[in-house]
Length: 363
Image (cartoon, rainbow, N blue to C red):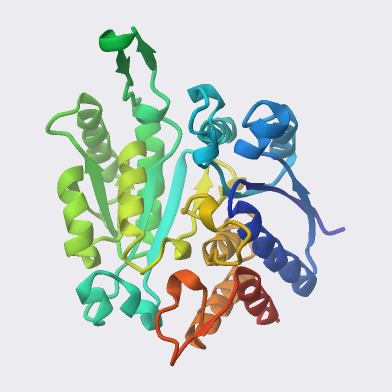
């Protein structure tokens, strides 16, 4: 009997509901065409969960997450909840979700679609001189976002706050090995991002990365300080293959790199741990200002679905089919609002219409 794969669907806030509907549509079409069985179960997370349950990450949602083979997340947050205490903010749910799943490796691929190159603000990409293809391997379950102590004290002019960036050997070793294994199947280069000239945690990071690199003699390793990295990602993105980053630096650098293809709406991600279970989500945020208007780009979510199919379900052929459908639809000139700039050559479509176009090409 074929296994039924359980997928926990967490739409979240803002455009999360819009884009997740299109991701579900693609998942269901893949299941229909390939004969796999899927059980899709939705849960509350983020601001909407706080509004309904008084917490951004209800226990019922966690139970569904624990029972699932994979999690597909939309987006959380928005100005509506900015005034909440830190432990009630929608973003707190993301930290709890990642920590609970023990997903310590966040993969964010950055690819340039040739027919969208003109959308890039980077001149050499826009004119076709370079076509970067890199992936950011971000440590996801430690570092400054989770370090203790973390506190704000005092009142008035005497207020002060502290955040602690902490890493252990084991936490650095495990993501480093994942990055080197990934590089072996790509161009064979790892660039490790740190601030080793200032931070003790980065000093340990660089030491451990150097030690682990000895086990991978066929993979080239270089180090780059995060401030220089921010500049080089813009000036020379073609020089990078696998970028190995601590949590906060990876968060910042991946958002910076998302401008390379021309829209953050094209950026998927996968968060993984030791097993096949993973958390999949678009890199972009909740964009509440366009929620429900059909303007959101669902492609980052759909490409995250492709990563889910391959990395958790082991369906590489099906993943390639989804990716090809995205490529073909864009190549035919269909564009969501964030990608639309030439009315003579392109066809503007809504969020739902883009999802329909992708789904129709999965045969």
